[in-house]
Image 1 (spheres, rainbow, N blue to C red):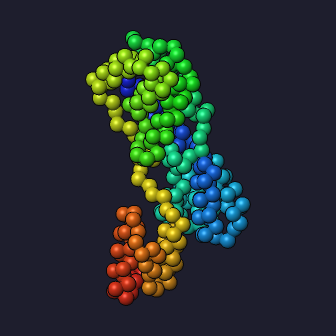
Image 2 (tube, rainbow, N blue to C red; image 1 turned 120 degrees about the vertical axis):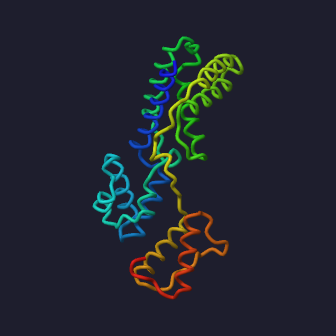
Image 3 (cartoon, rainbow, N blue to C red; image 1 turned 90 degrees about the vertical axis):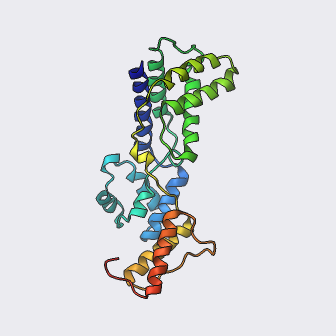
Length: 251
């Protein structure tokens, strides 16, 4: 039974990994990325939007720094390339990919000794559960696996049927608690990324230009200072360099 739960967990992890790797940015994210391109080179917003869209047609494994440079004709600064990594919040919803995940989940659960009641295993219920699991993942920035899906499935069951199937989920969770599921290995999803505001982007661009010209660094434009840890560290370094009064070439 342990191996069966592991298979279900791996199946969900693989499907959610493909959801990220094969997906496209949603409209808001696509526009934000296009504006980044416009800041880096003189192109229209329409052209930048098309370039961003075509970039995501490149297979995920081929989106290297060199390919990024070739595609956009922009130096692939780490902070810039990192903005092109998608997550569950910034990706365009793709029901087809989730339907594949749901079909596999249904297949595996029908092989259990205690198969799910037919109306509980209806495709619409499973789809709603999967999409809710994706939405819940937005705030935690974590990866998704079997346990996350079951919690959403249980919630959807309660919304549709009340406590009618509470007994079934008690059985499932009791079985899973006996099993040590493997850790999720979606490194791209687990990788910590930050979303930058326009003010933060403008500040980083000014530092880049000042670094190239070896001049005094700009302080953060807001009196409250940066809030993100990496930006706080950048400001600390620039203030130190300003006090020293010089910028070494190797920095």
